[in-house]
Image 1: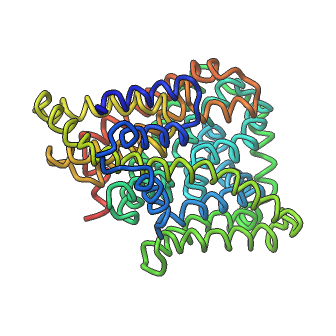
Image 2: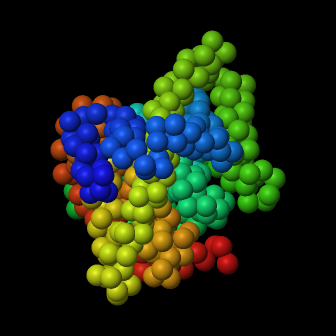
Amino acid sequence: MSSVVVFLIFVICLIIAIPVSISLGIVSVLPGMFDPSFTASGTFVIRSMLGGLDSFPLLAVPMFVLSGIIMARGGISRKLFDVFAYFMGKRTAGMPCAVVVTCLFYGAISGSAPATVAAVGSMTIPILVEMGYDKKFSTSLVAVAGGLGVIIPPSIPFIMYAMASGASVSDLFLAGILPGLLIGGLLIIYSIGYCKKHGEDKEKKEAMVGALHEKGFLKVLKDSAFALLSPVIILGCIYTGIASPTEAAVISVFYAFAISIFVYKSIKVKDIWNIFVEAIRTYAPILFILAASTAFSRVLTLMQVPQEISGWILTHFTNKIVLLLVINLFLLVVGMVMDTTPAILILTPILLPIVEAAGIDPIHFGIIMVVNLAIGFVTPPIGVNLFVASSLTEVPVMEIAKKAMPMIVCFLLALLVITFVPAISLVLLS
């Protein structure tokens, strides 16, 4: 069976709404079924699936998922927002900018874009609407800024890329900091321009910010201190060598429980079971996709698909700039129709040899890939962030996407800069 037929069957499975994990399993066993001499038998596929899950770095994923859910239930996002609103609220677009910064910080806790949208959006969108900001603008801002959750470390897609490429998780985390700040900065600039053009209800803004200032700086800081310390502790443990990313993920779970139960008292002991259930429901689909993706990538390797695609691309696109533009365009399209985890696990073994042959650093390429796929979170038809944001506000998905277009352009501008200025990703590694 040719590789073209395999991919065609995979696309058909997705079109007819077969779950991604099952689609990957089907196309993994087909070559062995039609050609008994092919190495990848059914037994090989099953062993590959189980072997793909036997990974110490992979343990970080369910831990970060659980930590993010605990902090969402514990109201950590509100604590973060209050402290940023205190300092930024009186300025032009101060509250929307505070939302972007809150997404940056919450992304440094959860490692997940949809989790960031859900936790930050459920709390900030009603506040922005109450202050007179357009509901569609508020919803789209949170949906797009939530994409920072997979770029700012710790990031679940970075862990997936590290598994597929063999790159260092710690290096990827460090490399994601400046690109995340760049994108966040562009979103803040857009928010300021939008609010200058459309105006703000200064009276409502003064009332909201004034209530925070009445509490006093020390009171707001005291309430938010443990929330602000969350990313510091998680990333500090990693970069000081105290803990590996996986161990830091476990630390984040215990820290989240401690501050939510004993400090903020926003979670009761009776809530813990439901939190674990929600975490399992969130992670289980990822687990099946991961197992099936691992098997599929090994089948593709045996079929020499990466070598064939690599040879074809390098033959037709010899210019490095053109090559990067083509790969970016390809990843943008993939991000629109495929979830992040299978996209990374399937495409990394195919694209990495190509970019390495062109002299591109694997860490730099990892940032490019994740930023591309992060844009997919806010682009139809699969854009998960759009659906999460829509569920929070009941604004139609396409209306959010339309309002988000200028912000997506900011994301694309940042992507071009990140692609052609490698130092932005690599300078912290030197």
